[in-house]
Amino acid sequence: MIKPIRALCLLSVLGLSGCSILPQWMDPTTWFADEEELKIKELKPINAQFVPVTLWEEEVGDGVGSHFSRLKPAVAYDKVFAADRHGEVVAFDKTTGKQVWQRNFAQFDDSDWYSGVSRIWQSGESARIAGGMAASYEKVFFGTENGDVVALDANTGETKWHTKVKGEVLAKPAVSEGLVVVNTGAGIMFALDAESGEQKWLYESEVPPLSLRGISAPTVASGGAMVGTASGKLAVVIMENGQVAWEQAVTAPTGATELDRMVDIDVEPLILGGVIYVVSFDGTLAAVELRSGRVIWKREYRSYRRVTMDANNLYVVDADSVVYGLDRRNGVELWSQTSLRGRQLTAAEPVGDYLVVGDKFGYLHWLSQTGGELVARLEVGNNDEDEAIFAAPVVEGKVLYTLTRDGQLRAIQTP
Image 1 (cartoon, rainbow, N blue to C red):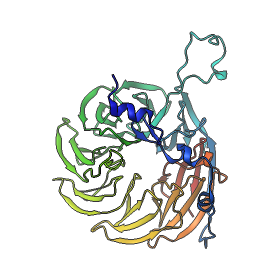
Image 2 (image 1 turned 60 degrees about the vertical axis):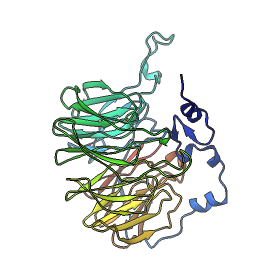
Image 3 (image 1 turned 90 degrees about the horizontal axis):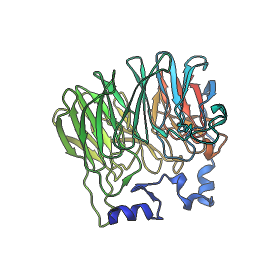
């Protein structure tokens, strides 16, 4: 029997699905552009300081389409590993873009009438890859909305193991200390043996009746697995045995309705120097002491994008796509960039002396780390939301790798 609150979530026409908020691009109220949307789409000229260079471009299946996804490439072992939602996983040479190997994890039913037809001409049932890619121990790891966690040989693409977990894997795994740590939409974080996929422990957190369509990716450091929860808590679990070291409420629900009370920490915790930095959907950016869970400072920023850092600066992209630079030591705001408001920016990734963000119209924007000024721009998606940049680029040195909604993977160099 479906509980009343669950039934309400499933049947709601207010942009909720499976008790989760739909992304803006799937909201029917945004299907018809108005003057405000056209104004957001129009970019003002900038005084460009350099021209980014596209090194190579390749296709990765059909991308993720209009589905919510945090699927992004991983870079390791001189390769770029990327996937599309349907099930195609590809390894490219990171310098040339040449394909090294390719696998297809779409599910085919041999009992179908077309089973005699070559699978080249069949699409199969989507594998629903969504959890992002991670590479370590000469393997590539990813998860799916079906609760699959898969490990592939990084050099050949051969399947090393395949494990089922409870809940959707919507965030990339964290791999360290011989374990693969995955967080699921069911509020359960699993630790799996990196060699065999065997479950070693699990940590379960409370999931409110209404939450964001997304989960915190775990971070592993100093012998602990750190994760944010849908109830606004930050937790540290001891990697060796799965025991909870501490849980700290970073924010608390307020308001009369379930919508008002959403406090998800939907981002991957960031750690440096014994301090963990997280931000919640309801508007709390916090610095928390790793050893004790003590909150060092709090500031009011509302975001579901990962907080990033370079030196003593934190970078936050809020829910309205305003970019902020803050002093990580005290949370004091240093600058803000408001000219990209409403463009559904990705997290801001440091690259050289700059930050780079992608947007829903297929543009990459470079900002100065010191003052937030826009210093360069590159159109990679033809100003089309079907070619939006939905996840933050992956940066290695001065080269970044970005994936669009329709599956275009590009390697771009910052001069």
